[in-house]
Length: 67
Image (cartoon, rainbow, N blue to C red):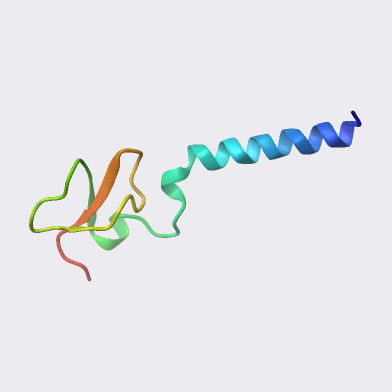
């Protein structure tokens, strides 16, 4: 293989691994920016569920009031 092909392949692998590690940071906003709390399991009855918005794997964003 040419050195350019190897370099390109290595760059693609690094980018793919980097995107997998930073799954929770895929949005420009996070749970904390909308006054939310990352909870594991379910949200409290008084909270709204916003999905995994900026939370780690297995956690979900729960917001008690949306401003």
